[in-house]
Length: 596
Image (cartoon, rainbow, N blue to C red; front, side, top):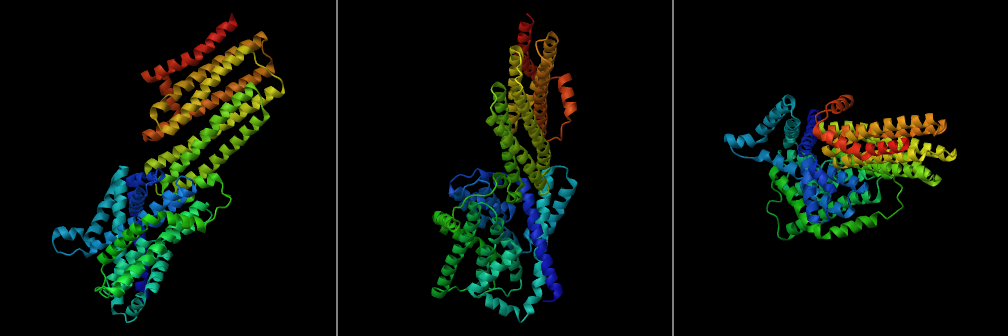
């Protein structure tokens, strides 16, 4: 081989890896991340775990990527270590799909039907159809299918380039001797492991081996140990990804390594035991792409079935290797694990979990601030500030994480979702700030011995009840991503605005009649303003949720509010009447009582 052949080989490998990557990305987008999200809801049924692991890996075209996702899920506490064992076993089966696709090159026959299925015809045809779908179609789903087909074409273009680059090896006097040395099981396993570790893809290294088989010099005795070694080499990616992770995440990576090591050793003993006792007639025969693909599949299925009953033992071995130590990793860092960026759909779901924590913090702080107005407690005020600091921290971390997700290969729907999430978390952070403002008002009232009239307090309690409901509604709407719940927020927000205006008028009346002093009046108006702004941000949140659910592009907040207020539909009117009767009517009754 000349230098040009080596360059062609490197280019072929690059095209193969790139094709595999964009085909996997296209498949993942078409699936909508359903299989990967299923990993989060994994049951303790190990057989189901194996099936999901195989399906997910077949979808994203990489056992390493699946294992890295599992490491991230275990690190985030979403998946238990016991559940991870089956997924990792299944990942080894799923990764064999690429080799089975490449074996299509061995199809024999000259009929038009069979010729269409030969990669020399099928790959460029798929790429041509795919690029037309990708560039001409306006529908997202068709674009994603087009991306998948283009990836399929590029994958085979890389395969053809590798085959062409290694063709001169047929006349090389040195190459057969190298291959002969590789028939030594130890050297063969090491060679397969090292090459796969370097390119970090067992599917790609199998593809390279299938390309070498086109020379006719590769035998079964050489190919078998190399294939087994490739399963060990693919463990390097999850091991590297587990650095700095939790103990269970490290154990997940070790489970992958131990499973492949034990499986390889057992299979080596089995296959060489058969060779030296019964004998294998085809041992020194030339191996084909089909034979490589079939052995790769058979090896991984056989090892999985053999070790499935010992899944508990492998888990214990991993636990023994990584002892229980005091955890020092930040909880947010675990939840927003960068390993999960390999699957944006899971990373988005993890982001949702952090938003849920932000909402939980806002709700608990709103309840706490209500108690501070009734009976001021310094310790409760400190807890409120601590919770607010956590909300700020979550907002900051989450923004950075969403930026990283947006730089990944994501669908237009996911892109819209992330865009709205940026605004939504900012709204919740601002709600947290206004609650702190209310806590400061409570502290000033307590410190300066300022008291509101009984009438003002009763009216304020009604307003607080309305604001509490709107915050809870926004939380419920986000949790369920429900359009109907989100649409209940704006009529309540309009009711709260009406209550605030009414309370301001009542308060001005009390100031004029001397029932309230100026200092108390200023504090009262500041409390009203903060409560009104909390409801305004809940209205914003409702719009973000409607945008996400409907997927038609972002709502213009001013236009939406103007339209709903000026031309309300029957549902809006009914909700508005219900809220006005529930809250505003009570304030009116108290006002009438006060005037009497």
